[in-house]
Structures are given as C-alpha cells and as structure tokens.
Amino acid sequence: MAPRGAESVGTYADGLTAGRPAVTRHTHGEGTVRRADESGTFLFAINHTAADAEVPLDGPGTELLTGGRAAGCLAVPAGAVRVVRLDG
Image 1 (cartoon, rainbow, N blue to C red):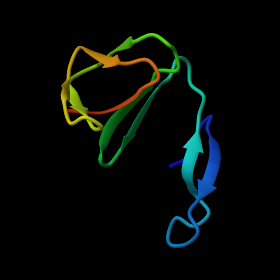
Image 2 (image 1 turned 60 degrees about the vertical axis):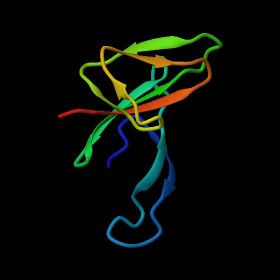
Image 3 (image 1 turned 45 degrees about the vertical axis):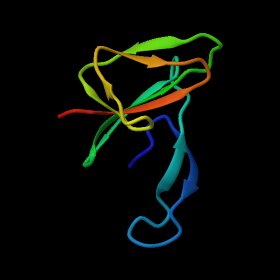
C-alpha cells in the first residue's frame, strides 16, 4: 500500500513489508474513505457530528461491525463508525 495523501502513523517492523506503512491517517472530506485491495472494496464511514447521517452506497454490501446487509444508503449514527465490504 502506498499512502497517497495519507500520513504514515506506523510501519511494519520485519518481513517482506518491513518499513512500509502498516497504519495510515488521512483526513478526507466529510468522513468517508474507500479502500480497495485483493480482499475487496471497503467503505469506511465516520460520523464526527452530533446528528445521524446517511451515506449513499455505490452498491450493496455487508456492514462488518454489525454483520447486517447494506444497500442504497448506509445509516451512520451520531459519533459512530461503519465499515462496509461492498459486493463484487
């Protein structure tokens, strides 16, 4: 993973990825980040506000923290985090 626009917070200590970013931080718009790798495409939604929010989804998926299905819009309660693994 190459952090484009992200700050490396921690690196791998050894192995094939020694010295490469293990944890990154990226301030991004209104609290959503999409990440794709060989295990799938993930949407991370962080609601920093005091009001519930809805995040539009490009397609259906599974919300990994609750195990529920998500499609259309993802409800993100105030102060909460949701992580969706998108289908396909």
